[in-house]
Image (cartoon, rainbow over all chains, first blue to last red; front, side):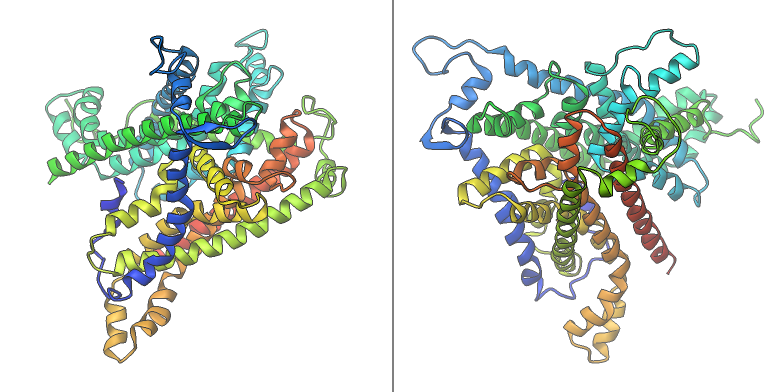
Length: 309
Length: 269
């Protein structure tokens, strides 16, 4: 909700104040009925009893959450122990998304900085070049990545051609392939917010640091980086959050061994597992994690705004 | 130290990384495009230039499946983008021209909810909803779900555009005895057109490209282009998939480019 403040620009007026509620009604009704109510129903489903082959029985149960975290019911006669299978999958999702975020930061930060220091008329064109791939179908991009990374694919051909390696390296169906896929899918999300904050940065601060004989790297680290931190954090969140719940990259690039939480959820509804309450509970765990990250971020942004003013 | 021509902005290596970034972003797309023109039954070997896989998409053994999927995809995208743009234009008018009100933050939260909830979670929630209210999964359920997640994509460019329009034009119209409705339809709406077109096109692309939510709510037998492509890819990447992907890719790039230039022209006014 960090964007909420940004959307309320100064050009806002009250010309259509009387019609306000009527104008908002369609979006309230539509999003309420088809987004908010479904999310609430998902929460309810996660506390119901599963029925054989999909669907639910309307009977309260915490079995789905128990299954996610423990080897038996938390309130049974025997003490429950932590069951690591699903926590491991969840942990792997965090790890994979984190690795993809770091990769994206390593490439995205210099790119954003470079674009923001171009002449003003040239910047929109660069930004446009970065955004185009985002609008290409994610499925097609993931399939292209699969095609690129194959053992006999263009990447290996290229590396062998340049003499860097002699035999093709197997990237596909590894954790690294998934990280590359996630990195590739969400890289534009890293560049855009960092670009926006570097563009607003006042370079006379860097000049002052240079006058005091700070080297370029020290200036970057000690002067620029603290000033553009909100943009960097925003970029990291925009890459991390969709990576966490992604389904296509682990499914197409990771093979069967490199399951992430998105694949686990999908299997409960589309695959053979067919345990709807468990799928709903896993979705709730993912959603809670994402909301916590977003809330911390919103609080940080609010704090940064207060400090700035 | 000489300070006169000292460039504080330039950092060594950053230009190189930017080029690397663009290569990473575009290389896979270019490779797929090139290999879609490969005159070979396998995707591995290059056997010369040919359009045969494009012909195959339109008249090959799978062409009927792709035609139906394309029809579903395009009709859903047109209807979803139209509905989402209409709902978003009304909402943006209230949010930008409706003064301060209590439910403003809540309304903005609701509009951006589809962007904040991870796509797979939204897919699960929508499926559970349709199942529990007893909607049969098919074309209609895909359409309903698409309209919902298209709304924020249409809303953002439309509200951004409206914030850039000074309200003195509408005030002037009202001073000349235009009703509020007339001020809206004759003054504000035409001035917002670039934002509306831009929002419409983005919603259209997002609907056309969606796989995850569609895959959950589509039910058996109804396919859109992405779900049909996914089904084929599961059995291995075939050259005709490369051709159909290239067409879809080109179409998205074209629409985004139009959207970019439409929103660019209005900045000069």
